[in-house]
Length: 329
Image (cartoon, one colour):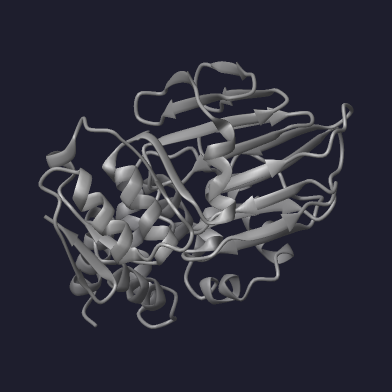
C-alpha cells in the first residue's frame, strides 16, 4: 500500500466517526507488521500535531506493565512501535485496544513493583470480578478494569474505563481509589457505581452506601463528598462538577439486566443500547438536543422491542435496522 494512502487512512480513522465494523477491521490492520514504517510515520505526524505530557518514564512504566499482563493482544501490538500508537490513542481518547487503554489509565502512576491483572468485558456481556481484598466488582459491557494482583501499601488503587459497580471491603487502613481518565473516586468501605466511558462527555459517580470522595486529577484540584443516593457528574470538557439526588439502587440495576435512565439524553440511552446489544447507532444528535427522558427497559426485552418503546414516546423517532447498524431518523 502506498504511504500516501496509509497516511490518509489513519488520519481519517482518528478524525471521523466510522461504523463499528470498519473500526474493527482498521484495528486488525493497524497491529499487523505490514507497512510498519509507513504506519509509524503517519502516527508520528499525528503525534507532532497533538500536545501531550507523556515522557520517557511513562513509556517505561507502560512497557513494564505490558510485560506483566498475560494478554495476547499486547504481543501483537509490539510489532508496531508502541511509542507512537499509545500517545495517539490516549490523547484522542479512542479505545483501539486494551493495551492502549492501559496507557491511558496508568500514565500518572508507577507500576514497577506489582503485577497487574486486566479484565476486558466485550459488548453484550457483563462480568463479576473479586479483587484481592475480597471487594466485588460488576463490570459492564465495553469496559476494562485494571487492578494489582495484590494490594501493596496504604492505597488500593484500580483503573477503570467504562462502567462498574463496586462493593468495597472495609479496611480503614487502606483507602480504596478508582482511577478514571479525569477523576479519582475514593472510598473506605462502601457500595457505589462509576460510569467513565471515554467516548462519553461526562463521568458519573453514584453512591449507594457509605461515603465517597470524588476528586479531579488534572489542573486545580476540585472535589465533592457524596452521601447515599447522591450522584456526582463531571463534564470532561468544561471540567465542572454538578451533584444531584438520585435513586442509587436503580442506577446499579444494569447488573441484573435492566436499562434504567433518569432524565437522560437520547445519546446516553443509545450509547447504553450499543453496548448492551453490540450494535452501532447512527443518529442526528442535534435533532434531540436539550431533551431528556426517564425510562426503564426490562432484561427480557429485545432490541426491536426497546426501539419500539422509544418510538412510542419520542416525537419524530423512527428507525431502521440493517445488520448490526441502527439508523435513527
